Length: 306
Image (cartoon, rainbow, N blue to C red; front, side, top):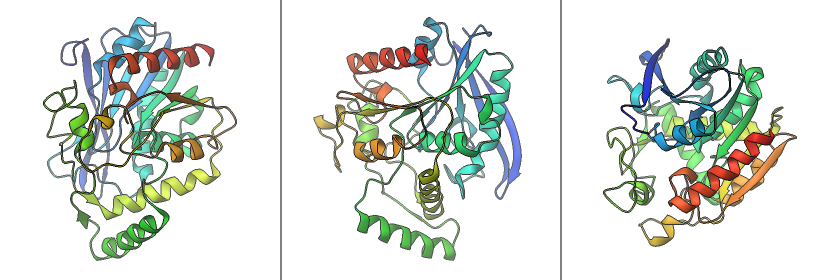
């Protein structure tokens, strides 16, 4: 499938926030038919929807496919906004709720499929989101359940974030995320994927300290998680920390620690399945073709049974 020809995007106008006008963008496959299961895809941090092969896979398996660009990300990023900024992860609940309501009106069942920070957002939503009762299952692709830092590093970073964000709500730091991951997936470097470098820069966006605090608060809230629907938590078979690209980046999660994903993932609810995907990258569905096809087929098996 082709992203420009086979998908249609719809702007969702949201309530203005502390920066002014706010929108989200809901993208739908043109091969959706309605009256069957639907997937709503939610992207990660410094990310947006550019995965047409996902929609193709689901449509081929008789499932409708939608993807949401959250406020201040990708297609929904407006000129006056700070990219990817939030004060509280619940800010995203408005567009998630509106998307779920729209999709549910055409579908037999709705499943959330969320990657990385989107996985954190979706997990929090399934605990307290307004329309969570309309969702039939949750699929998490390398969810961001903890910072990939030592206990001391986390303490220091959170202390600095609290102090800095008191001085300015837009206090930020550059260069926190290594470019190695974006290099490992972009076609101009070591990957096979093409994406908009204005929306997903190789060097990333600045990291706002207020965002760090919002993520930390969301992660801590999952200590009391009680998700009622079946949950599939997918993760790589390995993770490494690296500041520069190496071949290991093509077969490991170099963004998160898979032990954190497993530790928190199994506590999300009463119907959790952990699924290890051998040699997967951080975004499992951007991994090498044999790896992602194996992951897609295993996910489909879970979907069929849930």
